[in-house]
Image 1: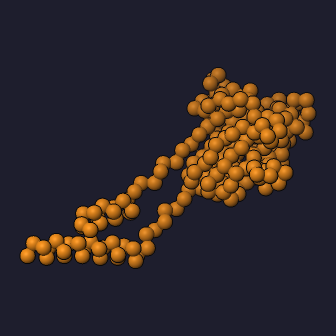
Image 2 (image 1 turned 120 degrees about the vertical axis):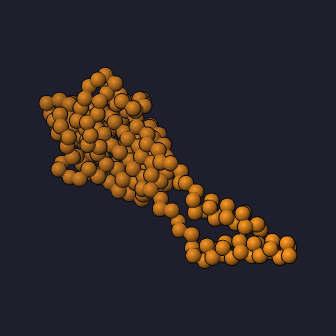
Length: 213
């Protein structure tokens, strides 16, 4: 093996850039489209009609912007690494020029209480995690808790925002949720492998020198 080949191989192993992380933003249902996001159809209904929100690789993130009105919004999502589900507390501007607070926000004179849950996609009857939150009125709100709603292992899930208890479309609210897949730490090359590559390169150099003499 030529030294140049060994050097190239070593450079590829140690210096290969990691795949760039992607951030996807979507606005669901009847909510005004958030600037920079893609509008999708209504995600409410039974789990079998869940909107496919895609697969997250390490470091990827997905932002969901939606409107909860006495129904159940369901999204199917798969993550290849640990995933954190959080409220997003930043102001957003819509394509209609409206600016609103974010997180979980009531849009009328009353608060909205909804159940946020993760279900096992392979068995929707299995609840992986569940929490109930009450929106503020025209303000950011998460019941005074941290922005993080869930942290779960890699897997395939159904994410639901269940506001059906509000009944008949009363007490609407806007929600802004981020799914963040944990970054994958690069696997360090063992010292023994580095020594092996260096040794092979040295042998190649010695063989070429011997041929010349």
